[in-house]
Amino acid sequence: MSPSLIRCLLAVLALSDAYEKIFSKDVARLLGVKRPTVHRSLTVLQEKNLITKELYGDVHLTDAGRALAQELETRRDDLTIHLTDAFGLSPEESVKAATVLMSELTPESLDKIAGKNLSKEG
Image (cartoon, rainbow, N blue to C red; front, side, top):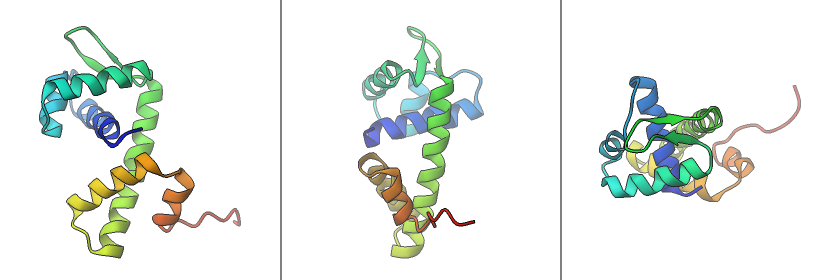
């Protein structure tokens, strides 16, 4: 999933947690982008069955979309903290870097970067 789709999905999650109804203009405002950009991303997310969007209306996460968004949010936050601590990046730069890494690397590679212990011992 591209960084822009990840950002859009996470924005829908954040807005869904805060408001009963959200619209594409709300997502665009949160992301600081124009509505046509968000419209394209929302269309792709809808094609992937991660959101539902009424024509000129409310945007909702599907169950699969909410689960994926929550997983991505946790992974982004873990990576952001690690990148800030390990490399001295600003939190803003760490979020950007984490989002790009999430779009290009496997979950296993991301866990290695975040310093998570992947052993099955327990």
